[in-house]
Amino acid sequence: MRNDFLDDAFANTDLMHEAVYVNAAGVRKEIKVDFIRENSEITVGVVGIQSGKPTARARSADVQPVDNTCTLTIDGVLYHVADNNDDADGQTLLVLSLDPTR
Image (tube, rainbow, N blue to C red; front, side, top):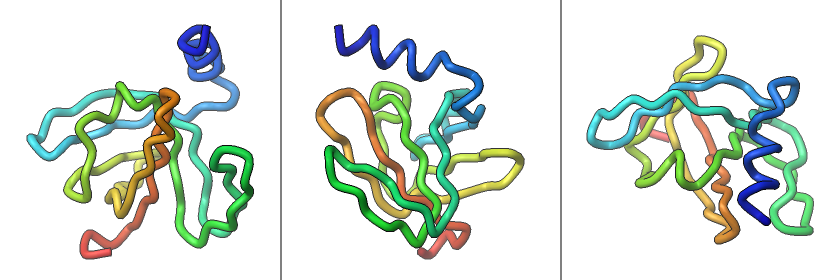
């Protein structure tokens, strides 16, 4: 049931951004993400958190493995993964940075 919800949510092209994810091994993968620009409120579980950095919510299966050597290109802009939070429910929140040294 949860996988059907995630499939439907990430299939909604009006809400999602096309992105290119590159993992630590250099493997490129085209994925869809819910992209949130900096200084926006994000929801983690039921808690709203003010984010000073851009974030992208992705299917966990699309971004595994993930660490701070990974990159995500959205709308032609290269972001570096500064941090990540897997919600253990099929989604991972990627905290992004334009600075590769974060």
